[in-house]
Image (tube, rainbow, N blue to C red; front, top):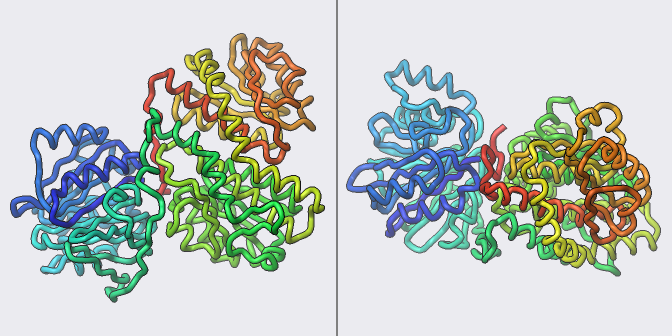
Length: 605
């Protein structure tokens, strides 16, 4: 999850590193540090806590030099502290390393290195890496890194510098993201493109096992055996402004408001009212052979998958199982060549999702990925990839990535239904039209912001909040509850409406806040009954409904949303619920974009 950045060139490396880390802090903010070659030695500065703490330390004791690496940490091995912060160095201080990932065999390596006389300062798994590189160092840092990484088990993206070779920056990756940026008389490494977008739009996307040697004058790429490889330069198409707040107080609020544009961009060229649905390179004949579909994802993407299941089953009549990626491969899933696995990951680097799709491919399944990041590991390892065009999503709490994932799954369901002939022309036309006009519907939902903002003032002091829903509304409620938990730290749980009487209703007492989602007219009467059950027991209820489902109960407050068909309603109904979570957290005074203990991209298991 951590963020790493590196620079070699003619400018002050510290300035470049701090700027890059500022744009990577959403990947982790337990501590931060830099290592810069300065005055013939590697100088290290690191500090516990937010990047601001490191900046203040560097203001008092600046470091200047033209070569350096930096790191912002999400703690795994070892508590957040200065000593556990990266960069880590060899005992003699001649080699410095930054690392994103987990070294699974670090205990064995640590024992071996101790026997050879190494001593360790930190509790981290990372500290074995500079010691191991130093053990192999014989005047060639590239060969030393190549030999060392061959001993590592687990996941890693590394940036390495050596005091004895200050004209080189070495980078390599395995199952953790890393890109190389290309400049004029300077070059860069980073975990994510936004970190270096102000400097260059030309990047190399490293594959697993590849190593890069960066100098001021250029970049040379190698495979794991040390053979030189060539690679096409990837041209970044989005602007630096896409990764800036642009006047909004927080990235989360900006990204909520970007959803109409993100949906429109994701559908553009793929959905037309009078042409067949296009699902990029997916073959219509191939798709008809699959008898079963698994959707594999984590967190918010998993919630999108639950709604995707309903859409695919209703429209295309194919059975779908939605699996938590962290559990999928341990459940001995029934996979064969007639199975389609849809892997969903905003970053394309989610470790559990990658592991699940690798298992699926081993078992002969066809893997379709849905991701927001071109060239990510998920995209490169899939049989085919559908890119959402959400643009950079910086806030840890996902919003526009979620709704573009929903749009992608609806598009897939229509593509499959069209090829299987499971919908009439009229049915297909209606749902195409509704999805085609979804950006305008989201604009209407965003107009509820002032109402929701006022509503948040009534509930932000609560310690427990419960969400209710049925059908796809249940999945929407799960995502809404997750958003609230992530940024306001209020304990919240979600229940299917019909399950209330099987135990959870015991939690309801006078004043308990219950948030209900009701958008499906066919089951709204049942939902009304569930709402009445909690109202009778003293709950303060807020119902997010539409014109067709709003009125036959006694909720304390009803937020009326745009009418949508039941299958497509989740794209609009989540919007005011995202805003509610945002404003609750604002009222509590919390850091919206960097919630505690979380990071944007979960690249460790």
